[in-house]
Image 1 (cartoon, rainbow, N blue to C red):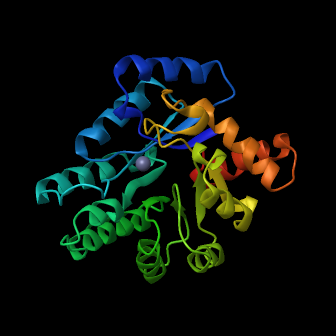
Image 2: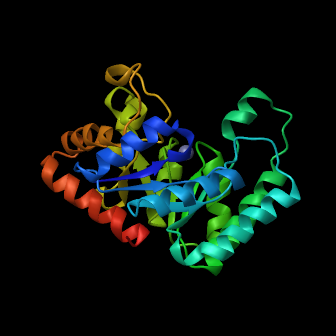
Length: 254
Ligand SMILES: [Zn+2]
């Protein structure tokens, strides 16, 4: 199994080392490690050098204030330098939660940053990892379609059936988080979205509720999501695990 989205650089060093040790001895055989800014890209790169099963993606996380020009240039320079060893551009997208807190935030500069990363994904033919939920996903689909981007992964997706249908038509991937065990909204998305376009992720170190309350988010938690998906889709968990692992490897070319 592969954790299709984790912020490995956000864990403390002890937990990081524990996770890296565990993935060499468990059924989790790889991590798609996304980045959130230039420092994060460097940390993710160092973790990839340390462990070949940490697959790096470089980007700028949208749930933060607009970065300086120099910061964006630095991330772009790192993408240009390492693109052959990156599995994706990400995490990038639009600041949904930040706009819930402060409605005065202008979206335009975020759209421009996102478009810059979309163009880099296109230039280097890399998949793009998106933080785009609810109505933001429509705007992101507009940009992806404008640039004819085929390989897009909407991580921890939440949104209406109409946007799900649009994403399905474009064959965009989504990934399911461990909250599928207790969130009806996520269970409904599993029901609607085809198995061929699903992956699983933790978005660690983000902490979950329900059976995961107060537990450190660990990539091995994806096995519970696979179980939930297999029950919802009425398929054996072995076949779902195989297919989801296949989907992830094919999408990220690992
Ligand atoms: Zn994330």
